[in-house]
Image (cartoon, rainbow, N blue to C red; front, side, top):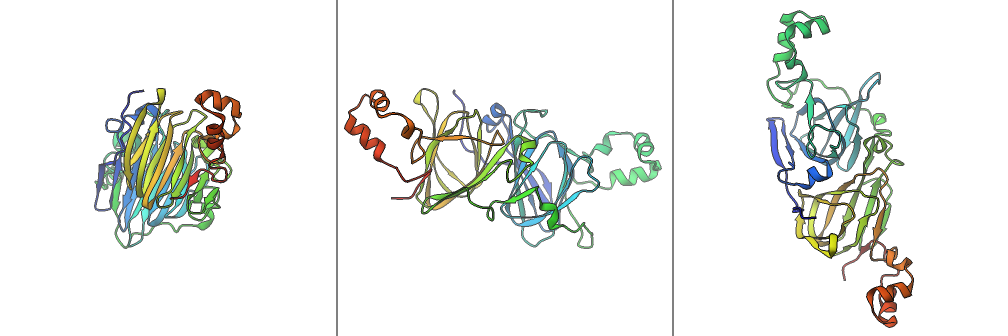
Length: 356
């Protein structure tokens, strides 16, 4: 498989005084198209407002920094959910759900979106449909259609449709009232990855919080799983692969480290250093391993199945431990002494290995 896996940063798509929207394109990161994955970031300044929109793709949203409000309209619901969000929050947003975001605070709010574009208009790219603004749905209809649909005069329609001149993101006036968020609206829709119980916690190695259909039911609707991994300084993540034909899409939240990916015929297809803000994708069944730099490394990943299964090649849970000694000895064409030495290592370490 000859394809460029080089980690990339996003490029600005649109924005203004209220903030900006950046995205990764399949032209810059070809694996997005291959895996049918979309990736983007929303960055809102104080009083920044991302107006209501819906997408052709299911997404997982992860709050990278700051706090604010997310409005989410679930089909056939009587009212929208007005959700308070903060750093570390993850939400699963099925395609067709209408959402808006608002930052009422002094510090910036940044949200990462990773999702499945296999049912979208463009593989590897989100197509978002804005309800208002110069590219909003209303602008495509003639005044006659809008006035008849909403029982308004054409004069009122013109005021309603054409007042908003900015695309997607605006800065609201201090006097503009917005709905108050409700902590109850978080139930079943949000998991905070910094507060949730750890699925893996290895002293000096790292820790993992896994998002699946058990702790975030809506991931079943979007068909994706996700996790937040924090790797301690100098620690290593065991070489492993997704054994259920899933792609791994990884965004480096903070810190830096080294990554190696091995693919078909034992070929090393990626060897590079990654740092905060970069995104890369591991193809199906390819083996990946990471070693954090001294300051450590944190990453948020989605996996293209709601309940992913991984096989690790080193550590206590390594698949090598389950293979009989005779088969290992024959496979490596080595002595029983070396096979026993190989098997005797990493008998207590799990998927993370602390720095030496």
